[in-house]
Length: 163
Length: 318
Image 1: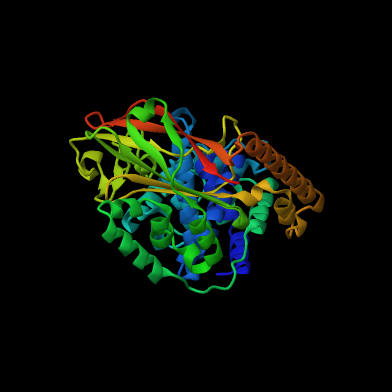
Image 2 (image 1 turned 90 degrees about the vertical axis):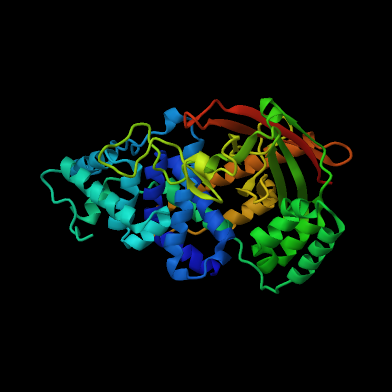
């Protein structure tokens, strides 16, 4: 894996890395710190990645581990689950409703939901990233959909409900 | 709901975040072509030491020679110059003092250090063992690493749990099930903090860290610092070839770059001044590393109050 490959793959995943980090850490500055740490760690240990097809899975797993470590180091009162209040940004009424629904989810549901539905990772990959059995990921996705459906009653929740 | 709807809940990725990623990517250094080296020689040397000393294995397994030749071999294999520089500058006789209330509970010490200025790298290895034979030590990060621990149980979610679980060589579960000896008290070592220069609040530029519990029992902590981030020339290089990422406003990008460059240059200046101020005439730099120990109540399955500690030590840098 050379620098050009690494850079290209990271830039292609910038949005995904942001969503994962902000979901865990809430603050933009913390998210940026965590992603920077993850990139440096990944670059240092790039030789350990044998299959570059799994770059996204591997990098996301490093980021999730780093976010969890940071989260654990915060005092308990700071360990809130909500996404940051970005109401000032123009995300529209629907966006606010969806954010509210996402905010209602525990991290353990929110993160697999983002990885599966937004980033398009297969269940097997999500399981690897989160170090969970595939069955657990499926049940968490199922639960996440149910919770989202309860919040978004007048919208179809997800196009793909085949899992 | 479509993917785009879900994505909108996150608002736009902040430009500062994108700029930080770009800046980080520019800091990466391409490795030089590789020649594999010395694994056999290292093994032979290790064997000689093992044969020559009754305590050899424990000593080897907890220092940088073991770490860079066994657990993390990327430098040996891909950056032999850096690996060699770390080995050549290894200091094993470190003047140090473990202070604070935590020092009464654990023998936490610097095993060796390597200040390799030519390669712009400083490495530290530390070990920690409980002082009381009735205590067993693990990493704080090994408690609930799966994220399923919650304060109040969710009746609809079979995965949540209110009991803390510990990850060890034996597996993942209740601490009394995964500890080596559950009749002992569990102590968790928190090594998240920075290494500070002397008594200042200025930290050395941390590059990476690693920690784990060895099969023999003690924990090992490994840290690496990027001394390049203490030099203006190196920092200016990072920003010299910056180009505006696609889709980003040039003025915003340049403003971010300027702010980041100024921040790093100021930090580098502070670090150099702190190093000069805390280096004695013999060339020894004073450093300190704050840490915490969390006692864990197995019966109540609860963390106790953290106990603070601080390691003070000196390494030869000139």
